[in-house]
Image (cartoon, rainbow over all chains, first blue to last red; front, side):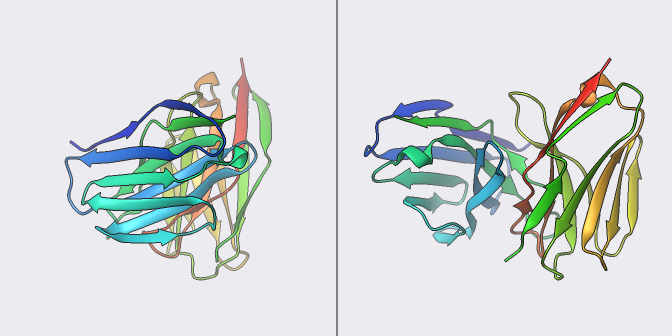
Length: 113
Length: 111
């Protein structure tokens, strides 16, 4: 069966520090991969999605970036965090072609101080 | 791009009552409309979805209706139970690769 792992679960970082959140999927190949941010009153905001290795689409201009170095690995990064980057980040995958069902990771809560 | 609006932001009902959550979308090309449920402290999970070639879909106590002309769709929960308490998100997509979510509805079902 397919599983998705996301870490770290919680993170407290100072303003200006770098960020790296990692997500891996097991049990499937060539998944679509996504990073969402969940903030109070704003629902689930799509940040990045990827349909293949090295293919990244950005949905929201910001100081975050994403990379997909391997088929089932998706990384969210920042060189310098802002206070406004605080939030709950969710990685997700879908099979893509014939179904849109998203399977979410357990999330990473980031607090920028 | 697509924009999805969801109402109400909070909804309180008594156990056994019905609950209705409504969403509107902007992109007439959207053809896939899922609903996700997020219980407190847990990840969102798909509960039901509908495609644009269908006007209504039902699964036990939950149903979704779609009006393509008006570009809105709704989630209906009948005979609500305390375990239905959660945040519900609607979403829309013109393809399976990118979902745009609404802002969520916090449903509270009181015993």
